[in-house]
Length: 312
Image (spheres, rainbow, N blue to C red):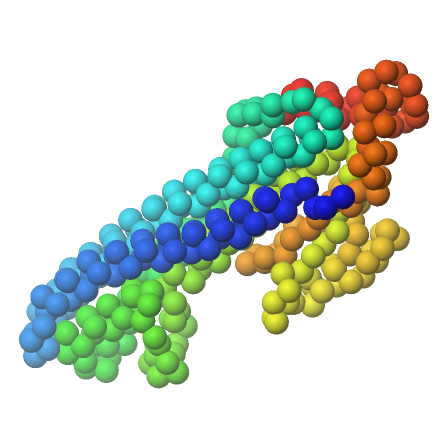
């Protein structure tokens, strides 16, 4: 049987690509507004030290306000895409289940809400991480980097406009920053939106994985899961190990349904369901269960699956 969740996987890739554009756009909008503020300072390179300090203090406050707005919008974008991803997986599963001979409309909004909350609140990570803290932790990091750019500029006795242009360059997600930037501002990121993009990709990846497992773990016709690397040139050793090593005696890259490892941050690997029964065998098993005939163990597993679907 072909991978029944190919549609969900394709949609996941679309969401990740579109989300990247959405977040980049939010940063670019803020960058354009900050650029307007910086333009007002053109020709003010030779102001007094006191005036320079006051101008920079005001500009820094403006930038921090814009960055706060960016992070608020970013969190909203990710939250919406997590909801969308989970809905797609559940709808895909609905189609798959009905193709097996069952007639269920799996639209339980309570379970979907629980799944979204599990991802966003950090309960998935046993309270060690959540998106809100990660985003606002990154916001504080950006504020520190902005302060360092200003301090370094003052230390180098750069003019007000020149320091302002450095800040403008920092907040521009499309600005190229060469080795000289890292040398001038060590520890300052080259891509202001990098951490946000990383958090966004990770969250969508985990939303896809968690909803996939939730939808399929009790399906008696799915035997296990197979780990599949993203196929890129920079696949890490951990993911290669997950794909090529037989950890559970089921074959290379194959995991029991309750042992599928969570993809690492920024990961784009995927997985597929292992279905050993043919379409005809599945149809026969469903018919036997309906008639109360056939293998008792399979009938019990189907019964459990059906009860789970009723509560889905």
